[in-house]
Image (spheres, rainbow, N blue to C red):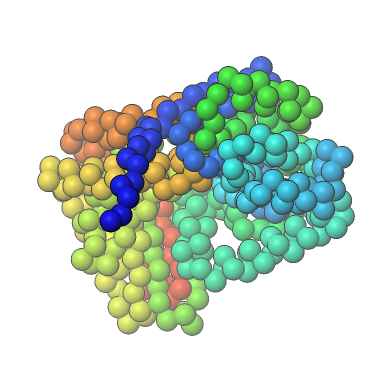
Length: 402
C-alpha cells in the first residue's frame, strides 16, 4: 500500500501589476512584480538612427554594437566578467526610433548590473574597431534579407532619402568622432526608460537605481526633431533575383491598438491573394511579391486589398486577433513583457497591466477603425519596390487609385 502524499498547496499565480516613477535625474523607471525572472532594460528614445545628423549616418548601429564595452573606469573584459558572474544574458538592439541595452537574470541579481546599462563609453580603439566589424557583418546579413531591404526602402520613400528617418539604418559610415558625438548626445539617462520585471518593491528599487546612477551621463536634454511623413517612392532594381517585392504604405497617426487592428484587417483581406500587412512606426501598409512573369498583377491585388470595405464582422475578427497578439506579448516571458511595457510607456506615457491593454482594444469601435482608414488613405502613399521591378507601376499611378 502506497502511503498517502501530503496535500499540494500551490501558490496561485498573481496578475502582473506595473509601477512607474520619474526620478529627479529624469530617468523613468517602470517595474512589474509578478515575473519569476528579471529582464532589465535601458531604452534611450533619442538613440535611434532617426536622431542622426547627416554626418553621423551609421552612428546608431555602431553605438548599439558598442554595448557593454569599456567605460566608467571598467574595461570590456571586466564588464563581461561582471555579467558572467551574475549569470546574466545581455542583449542590445536599436532601430530608427530608439536603442536598448538589457539583460535577463535571476531577480535577486537584478540590481547589480544596472550601471552597465549607462556606462560612460571611453571609445577605446579596439572597441570601436570591433564594433565597426560587427556592424558591417550585421549590414551584410541585413542586405541578404528582402524584408529588411524593403523596410529600408519604404522608410526612404515615406520620409525622403536625405532625411534622418529616410536614410539607411544599416550603415557604418560614421567616423569615430561622429560615433562619440552621437553617443554623448543620445545615451543619457535624462528621458531614458529603465524597465525591470520581477521587482517586488518598486520604491526601494527606484532608490537604489537613483544612487547607482548618480554619476551616469545625463545626455542632451533637447528634443529630437519630429520626422515629417512625405510619401513618395524608392526603387531598387535587381532583376537577377527573379522576383519583384512591392510594399505600399500610408501614414497612420493613430493609437497603437487601432494601428494593430488595421494591420490585422488588411492581413485578413489580402491573405488569399498572397498579400500581407505590416505596421512600422507611424505607417500601415501591405506587401506582396511575384516571380518576374507575374509582376504585372501585383498592383491590382495591392490596390484591391487596401480599398476593400471593412465590414463589422471583419473588424471584430481583427480586434480579437490584435488583442490576442498584444496580450500574448505580455505573457511570453520576461523579455517580451519588458519590451511591451517600454513600448507602452514610450507611446502613451503609462502602463498598468494586461487587463488595461485588453480593455484598450475592447473600447475601439467600428467607427474608430473606419475613420482611421479614411484619414490614412488621404495621405500620400509611399511605394517601395525591390528586385525585377521593370513593370511595377510608379507611385503616382498607385496614388491616383485612392
